[in-house]
Image 1 (cartoon, helix red, strand yellow):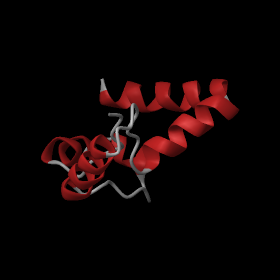
Image 2 (tube, one colour):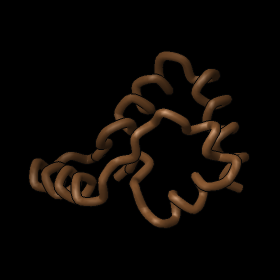
Image 3 (cartoon, helix red, strand yellow):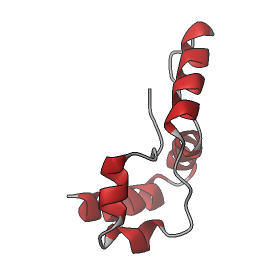
Image 4 (cartoon, one colour):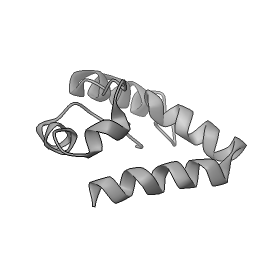
Length: 80
């Protein structure tokens, strides 16, 4: 399971700080949607479940790995 950003109190607390400028315009996944997609993936026997933006991240990391590494490093710095 590789969840995208999910609309939770934890993420809302992070978004209230400086991290908000890095994520402006991005929509976070609803927890109920994440659960539904996760259960559906398990029922289909998927080995990897990548709902929403996680699937895009996986694809982009194969197409442009250095770019994605830099992007993730920027986001991780704000979260740390």
